[in-house]
Image (cartoon, one colour):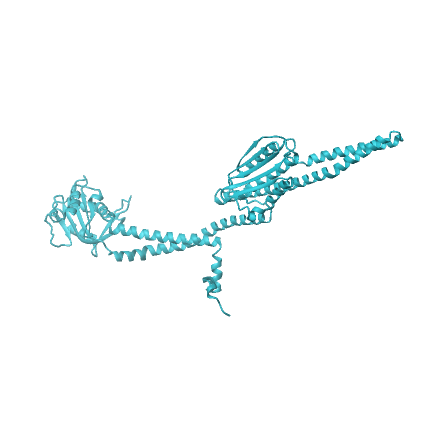
Length: 512
C-alpha cells in the first residue's frame, strides 16, 4: 500500500488517543473553557510579574524604605530621651542602647504596636546592615557612635556629612517629624535617615542618625522573593485559578452552546419547511437579537409561502372562471334561447307543455344567474369594484410596508381597460414585485402604468443588484409565467437588467 504524503495531516500522524482528545477540544464549549482557563493562568502570571517588579522598585529604587526607617527612628526616640535628659548625657546608657539595636551587624528596632500602651508589646523590625549609627546632642556634638571608627564622641558631626545627608540631619535638629524630610537614598546605594529625640515638653534633646546598606543584594533579594513569597502564593493561585477557570469556562460555555443548539434545532425545522418553529431567547445580548431577527425572517417566509399559496389559489379561480365563462355559461345561454324559441313556436299547444317550457326557461335563467355570480366571485378580489389603478395602489402600498422597500405608483392616461387586460397586468405586477423583494436587494421600486387609446404599458423598475437575464436566474418560472400571460393576449414582455444597476420589467398590450 502506497501512502500519498500530500494527503497526510498533522492530526492523522497523532496517536488515536491524542486524536480523540484533539477532536474533543474542537467543540465550542471546550474551546471556550480552555480559553477561560488560559486567560486565568496568564492573568495570574502577569500579576506575579507585576508584584515582583513592584517589590523590586520599592526596595531598590524608591524612598519607601528610607521613609520607613525614619518613621521607626521617630517611634524609638522616647527610649533615648532619658539618657539625653541627664546632665551630662549618659553616654554609657547610650552605648548600651546602641548595642541592643545592632544585632549581627543589622539595625533591629523594636517598634510599638499601634494603639498599644504595653512597653513589652513591640515588634522587632530589621532594616539593613549598619554602616554607622550616631547619636548627637542638640548642639550637634557626637555622644555615642557605632561602630567606632575615626568618628569619636565629642566631635562635631555636621562637618563630617555630605550635603544631601546634612540636609536631613539639619531637619532633625530643627525638630522635623516628616519622614520624607528626614530620609533619602544616597547615590552610592546607602540609606540615610535621621530623627529628633524630644523631651516631655517636645523640645529637641538630640538626633539619632543612621547610615545603612540593604540587607540583600539584588540577586539574593529576587531569590528570596521567589522562594518565600511569589512561588508559594502564585502556585496556590495557579491551582485555584485553573479550577476556577475550568468551572467558570465550562458553565459559561455550556449556557452559550445550549442557546446556539436551540438556534440550530430551529434552523433544522425551517429547512424542513416548518416555519412555525421559533427560537425562544429572552436575553438582550447579540444572540438574543439574532434569535429575534431569525424569528422575524421565519414569519416573513411563512407569510411569503402563504401568499404564494393564495396566489396559486387565485390563479386556479381565474382558470375556473374562464372555463365556466367560455363553456358552461354559453351553453346554458344557448339552451335558454332554444327553449324560448320552442315556447314561441307552440302558442297553440297544450297548456301543460307551455308550463313545462316556462319552468325550464326559468330554471335555465336561474342557473345562468348563479354562474354569473360564481364567476364574479372567482375574479381577483383585488380588482373587484376597484379597477386596475386602485388595485395596484393598494397592493403596492401593502407590499412596500411588508418588504420595507420604498415604492411609488405613477399613472399616465388612466382609463377603463378590459378585465382580461387588468387581470394580466395585475398578475405581472405581483410577480415582478415579488421578485424584487426576494432577489434584488433593492431599496426603492416604481410601478408606472401608461395608457392611451389603443395600448397600455406597465413598467416595474428597481434600483437593486440586477441579474443576468440570459443566465439561469433569468429563466425562472416567475419570468416565464409573466411572459406567457402577456404573449397570450398578443403583447410582449421586455426585461432589462444590469448588475448593480437595477432591473426594469415592461409589459406591453394592445387594448383595441
